[in-house]
Image 1 (spheres, rainbow, N blue to C red):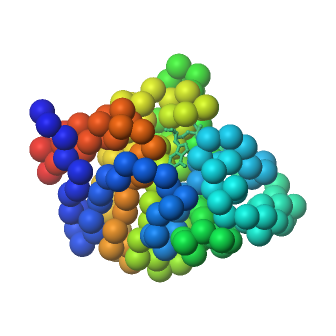
Image 2 (image 1 turned 45 degrees about the vertical axis):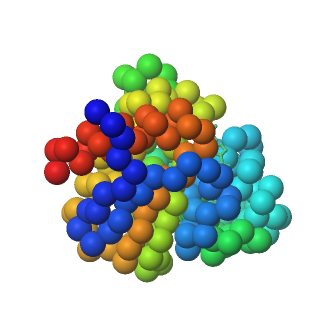
Length: 188
Ligand code: ADP
């Protein structure tokens, strides 16, 4: 089956983009962060690099107030120098083979991010492919959890979100998500 790059769920457009999430002009972008919120490699490093030190400073204050963030949770900061006004930092699970609740924790990271965006009445949001880089979650399974969770959320609740994008860094990841979105669309 060939891929799909956009579907509509309820009143929200769900689209796939290949590119760098730090350059997205959606109101918020999601960061696949570490529990200490102190930045790191991959998309986390790219977001802090592009957004400047103000984001890290807000993260530091959050951690001093509530401690390290649990896997599957999300918090929001400003977007610093990014075009996006906000960054939603969420913690995906490290892949340990799939029997340690990874799928539910990954779904929770997406849901908590969507809840946070809805609480802030945001109209547009971009996600990276959470956990599928350094955290080792197999890409096709990560894509299935990501898309099914976002689709279920958009179907199930009233949300301010008009547009949700997955911004996928390389063409291989894009193709995996596109094939998975085609599968989801065929079941709708
Ligand atoms: P995790 O630790 O959650 O696995 P990573 O940042 O290592 O997070 O990887 C998550 C995904 O983000 C990977 O698919 C990686 O290719 C992708 N990625 C890395 N940099 C960017 C970026 N600037 N924009 C979008 N996606 C990115």
